[in-house]
Amino acid sequence: MIEMPAGITGSEDAYDDAVWEILGQTYTLKQASEASMAWHARFPAGTFVPPHVHPTQDEFIYVLSGRYDLWLDGKESVATAGDLVRMPMGIPHGIFNKSDADATSLFWVAPTRSLKELFARIHNVPDPAEVIRIAAEHEVDFLPPPQ
Image 1: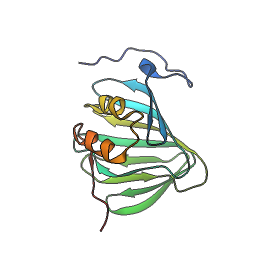
Image 2: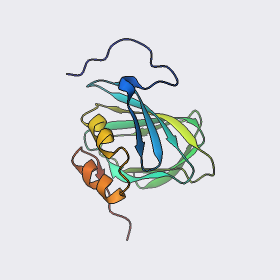
Image 3: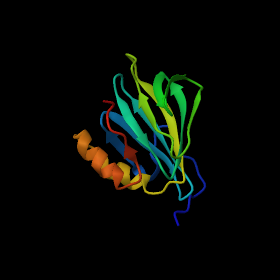
Image 4: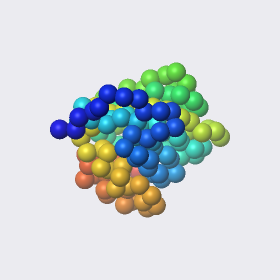
């Protein structure tokens, strides 16, 4: 079991010194335990996470700045600063920054499962097809592109 110590992760700090670069986005780990994992995310303009499903985790986004265009359970929506996005386990979702500015947010999942290991494995992997292949080994299933 991963135990979470009490404490504060500073605004510029990473829990366990974990910072991942994943397909143009920066994820800074803020907390991790068996029950949940949280990370600060910076999505530069034009970056995205294609539609996918977490079959064993609920996922959340608290938007700090900017705008996210979302595809959530087959519907398009927009989240901006102060909004909380709820993505229940098993529900397909995609996250896009279609704006011309960075978007920042706090993401978290519950339970953690093997997401921390996934992020470590796909850190600096430049090939999206390889990221998708590795993700499937960690209970994150990317959907095929629309026909």
